[in-house]
Amino acid sequence: MYIRDIYKTKKLPISFEIFPPKGEMRVEELRGMLEALAGTEPDFISVTCSAGGSGNGGNTAALTGIIEREYGIPAVAHVTCVNSTRADVDRTLADIRGQGISNVFALRGDKLPGCETRDFHYGAELVRYIRERTDLCVGGGCYPEGHVECDDFEADLDHLKEKQDAGAEFFLSQLFFDNAAFYRFIERARARGITVPVDAGIMPLMGKKQITRMVFMCGASLPSAVVRMCYKYENDPDSLLKAGMEYAARQMVELARSGAVSGIHIYTMNKPEVAKFEMEALRHAGF
Image 1 (cartoon, rainbow, N blue to C red):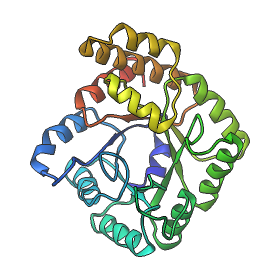
Image 2 (cartoon, rainbow, N blue to C red):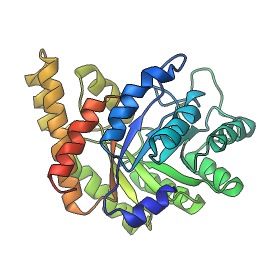
Image 3 (cartoon, rainbow, N blue to C red):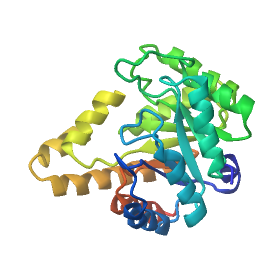
């Protein structure tokens, strides 16, 4: 099933993001995680290129195919391009199509140390390349608080419009902790001519190190409520995890009720118990 069709039939699609494990993929070790995720009935699952999100991990296509074939859940394979040649991308797309996958998520990706930019510089170029050569449904990323490498928010919106014009059919947002930031972003994006579905990307807080790393990598701002939470449970990781999941649940329910989002995309960090908690909160709220 094409992801674009899910938005036509579901009022508020709820999706997960997972990543292939580092090193050699041991499929049997993934069964428990996939079984648990499937049991919560997400509308689709996206699979990143690697645990760090950069580089086209060879396990992405295989894991995406398993989700589709064995669990009957529409799946989206991530494809990055900044460290790749056209031939590299062609091989990646061939692997994805060979697995029977119909949907991809096109990203520039992180620049790897010591690796020069090759045939692609921006995500929009990859979106266009895929749409011109395949019948795949292509999604792209968006940044409610602006891309960390772009100091001009208006320019960032221009880049988003370029992705849509290149053929992106849906957008999944980078994580954020302040819903007001998303509301400002979506209002300006719609005014700029973004008409395709835009999902809010939410990552439950799971630990202090994770927060520090994500804020540094993504440039997401931390509301005072999150800072106080981290301070309160600085030496109590279990309570911090619980508080973080509850905060994310409140975020998602508020976003869903606002009508400003096309869907909710949960960054699960491969933790089914977290995905289950957030799904139950949304279902309890009527979504």
